[in-house]
Length: 339
Image (cartoon, rainbow, N blue to C red; front, side):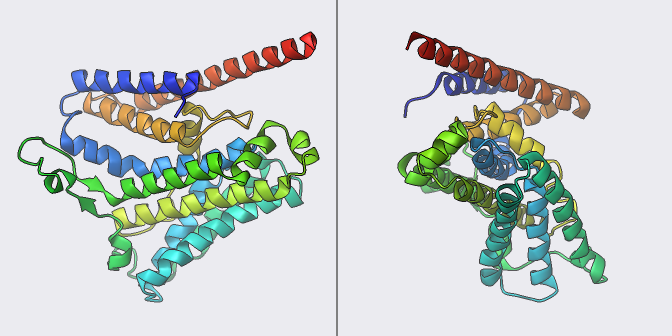
């Protein structure tokens, strides 16, 4: 795999960050902390990958966290109120997330709304829908009742790879959460989708130049709708992971995740101008944010300072993205002028 300069810089920054916290923060390099990083930020990486698709087509999805909340509450209601078996709930949850994302795409291509406005509106709508269907509000006694269906809570499973490989006695290794493997599976699938299919090529073309893509015979509307549908699907996967981890769902589930997913994608080198980015960068961006937050917590840094530092990292990433965009524009002008 050939890395772009932005990706290489991200990997270098990630390596330096890990090295710094390993040296400065007691316990950062421990197996339990690595396990916490994987379990706590694999779903963030999934959300970041989902967010990447709208950004690649010059859009954005501000409702991705609210979609996760809707899906989480659907799982909660179906499990604890209607007693639907978990093996039936899982595909239904994924379908709900995908449909919510499809609605976002339809609003953009049918009503010609700006992605920011369309998804800001659905953020409010989906969050309100979550409250309106909340079994915690509708049925007394469910507030403290946990979800116990093995198909749901089984998503929060851990695997002792060190023991399987015979390394447990010689090397302290973390237990790997199932959510980490789900993230890797989606990463592989999305990389193939982007780099090895016609849809992936169309996605980059639409993000690079809408009009040129249309003149080339690409169905821009279909590509955009599918991009938002994938984002909704990823929100559903993340919701299932969160529900399994906490054995419940709340109306506030996913709050703020839209900003975190955007930050991870942008830090990962996905250009807000569209048409540039991959799945690798957002995954590294998500775990970079996780490493920074966990490392600062171990160092005793107050939460508000952590937010400032996270914002500063995002500003640097956006500034670097704009610098690269300006260089590309200058190069394009130079080429056209020379022609």
